Length: 157
Image (cartoon, rainbow, N blue to C red):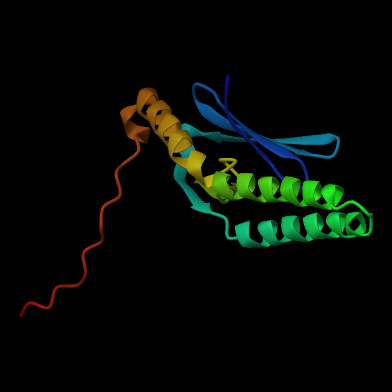
């Protein structure tokens, strides 16, 4: 069994594993781990979209940076405040460069799992291609079909 991805959340990590015939989600909350299995033959859809919380996360990081630098401004030397502001700026730039988090919904015949499948949105394509390759190897019946645009109603006579 190969580890597909590991995404960290406030409640704990969600780790996805790929086996020969199924996906396994290990959802850890505190000291408990909940395992959920989705067989490839039961798989209906895998949808990944970017999370819209990047701006809020950057705002919280800016607030923490400013609140940590305020007491340092009261010191006679301005170096500690400048150092804290520089560290906060690097922290925010690194988070901004990594991009938004990714959220996913995996639906099978029996259930649906919603949670992060990829840690960041920029990793989603690689994870989907690994999953598509595994699905094509299992059997042609479960192969991933390319999306097709829906045709609108015809207005002909």
